Image 1 (tube, rainbow, N blue to C red):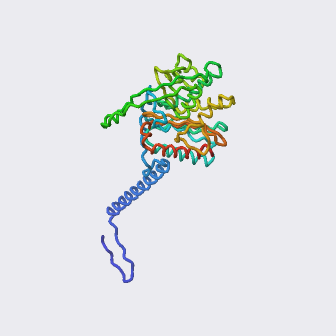
Image 2: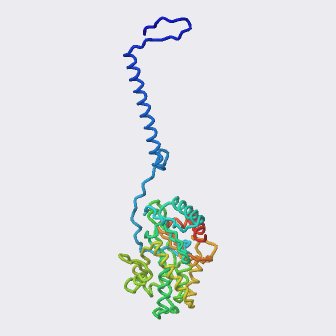
Length: 370
């Protein structure tokens, strides 16, 4: 630039080069354009993350649901008696959404139960129903499991229903026996090199049918069950499947039976169990001496999986891949509860499973007694 002459104290003045001025203007326009684009980009990002919500950059990735596997197939082997040591495929959880009518207390209890069941190993199914107002908790309620000794519950009801119709004499004396039975080593124990168990002498006394039912239900006695189903087999041919259909069970493609040929075989779900409990309660409500006698047998069950502060008419089942407990809970506002799991077998030596059941019981109580 050319500087012109300047008087003392006067402001300096420059003659501008036109080409340089144009270059400066173009540079300023480019800078303004870049700045504007940057601002627009920031605004667009802000709007995007506001709309995306929980899917923003700080949200956790959602794990895919586990792949469903088939439910365990029926096993035609009896489980151990309770007095002989028994105290008493994983699918993505199907949980019934909390109803709009839940109180804040119920919603909190439901969420706590959901979270605890999510933390447990294996497969767990739960159905609890309070008939007075329909309060329900359901999780994988239709998943089928090998039923094990739970089959003794509908079988006992079937016998007493037939007795009421004059088809079964509960005072008939059933012959007992004394025999040595082999104890089969499990595949896991055999693989671990454990010695085969010593054969045991099993003695079953002569007793009336009603005494055998009481023993079968309250103590889960397999000997008593065998006495009964030897005399009165429960199969499709003898009407047992039709009886279960009448309780509301879908028997399509299913074989549930107790007989010398089948032993105890068949599957049940938590939904099936609540239908059976409902039918049991309806029979108890008839108030006959036989009905009250059968109810007492279920009240006398001594196993401690589901636990509450109230009397419970209950039955459990335990076998490889099966540890279940079902109950009519006689709280001030009674309800039905059914818990099915694929834990099984190790429960006879692993107290952790009982602890799981205690926690489930406490959380279920919080919801169903709220």
